[in-house]
Length: 169
Image (cartoon, rainbow, N blue to C red; front, side, top):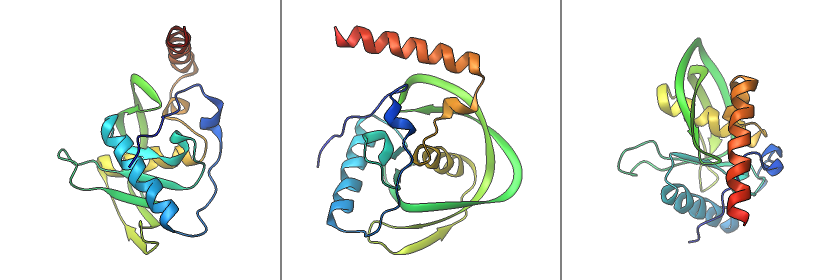
């Protein structure tokens, strides 16, 4: 297993739209394992392959407190089941140190392939539904900062650019 470098906003590679996985093979399963290692080490509750500069439609999530419920979503698709919107404070491994309130549907249906390429469907609510939508945004070249005001997004961008410049010295 390997820890993968996580791209940070405003890296333009985070805007790349991920391509569907055509075959779930050992290479994809290794990517999944490395993504879990990276996500748990960060630490986070979700990670999209786009965040580690692999532009394939792969997401790993574990919203449990004890890291006991790892979930893999390959080529995920969502459908909104309830139009009621929920507010959650979201953070992101690609936008470290920042949390903002984002409004998203609170109940969705997800269809995807698991780590063995077997199709499955779930109807999550609450934090899992929000986390899945957040990670799917990554696969579509979006970040949670795209859901907040331009003023806040610009402020976060400036602070992270300053941090990146200081780290490069």
